[in-house]
Image (cartoon, rainbow, N blue to C red; front, top):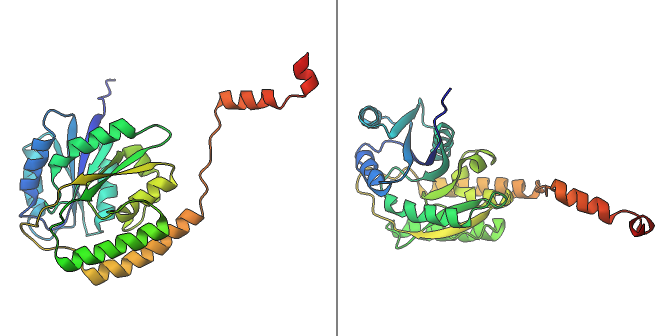
Length: 262
């Protein structure tokens, strides 16, 4: 039986009521990924507008796009988890469905990942938004939230809220999964023994539709999740795996000095 090789990278796009933004975004992703071995996985998180119909038509007209739909909206993290599970690639790039992230940044993030990632120290490449195009209130609250989170979790990441991230699929699937986990990926990767590299990316104004996050809502759930992730960090000590060669060397060193002298 012939088994098709896995694609190199999947671009996972969580979408909720983004009918005016999704088709232009798909076109930009294809332009950015041209010449690469890629797939696009769009997860429609219970949209109530015509997003479902638009994605169905787009998937029927292209072989690089697959669409998965949640019957009801479950949130961005749930959509990302669904998309990563459905992906047929070894590497995952996530990008918001509202068009504020620029897909043109993905190839450079891939280069960073391939340069730094190791089997024993997996790399998370996290987008660091330059010249954010959000309103003043959102920028200020985000800056405060990032500072508090970084102080408590020590994740050394100035912008965990950026939707552009790149990582190995298998590593992500081994992480604890919970609502809003996408905002804590740097801390979760470090907890798993990985490294986090912040990569400067562009940021654009939303051209259509409305933001799905309110400032007070984000603050309330953010504080709750912060406590939970801090608890996860304290309740886990990552095992250090000893290879067979290291075990043999340790056994030899532990032998009696008289025996070693014979």
